[in-house]
Image (tube, rainbow, N blue to C red; front, top):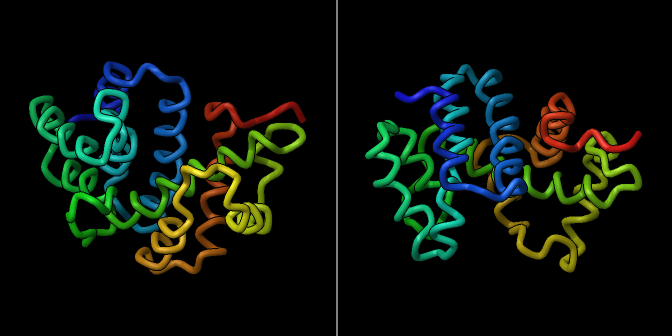
Length: 188
């Protein structure tokens, strides 16, 4: 299995966008918090979260991502369980989510992106201004962050077996703990 540093290097090799790199870090933050809560393999869960969208810039379509990236990860020594979890985070691949890692990655992906987007529109551009109520309010605003699939957020919490409000709160708090690195500390 590759380690976190190797995963970060792979991510940076294929992902040039600072925003997409920050998204990987935000997803990693939420997934890592759940790894600790559920007793998952911390390093494997981190690697999986960091790499889940590594190929988006080179395969930015449903036909390409993450299916075409999976063999690239295999060539770089990424283990089968991690690659399967990455495939399962995209429902269109048809790979069922069965393991806690797979369910967690799916549950955290869209939500981490949504929390980031909400942070950017707060007065101080800070994740510390985000809470469950603000996330649920923005979920109803279909014009806000249109690319975020709200149903994936709801379904992800359900698949994880965590009430939606608790899941949102858990991820917000995880991201607050790493706000500076995520670029979400704001100007408070």
